[in-house]
Length: 81
Image (cartoon, rainbow, N blue to C red; front, side, top):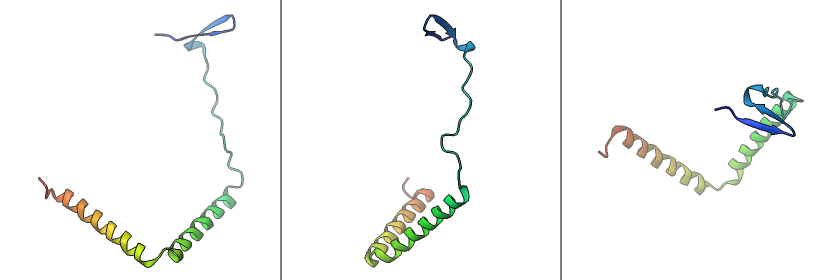
């Protein structure tokens, strides 16, 4: 099946349409400085997380992680057949 397109007074078949060239939307201007800024923002964010989150939340997250790991191991061992 060949698709037909009507442009003004001319009909084109799909085989006559040439693909558009690849064009970058966001050129990599200042790649190194942007990468350094990105890593710095990530580091500051991690430091803020460690400083500002209360201790009990960290314990709760560790508990949730241990429960998830235990469920995953039980699933791998096929304990619930």
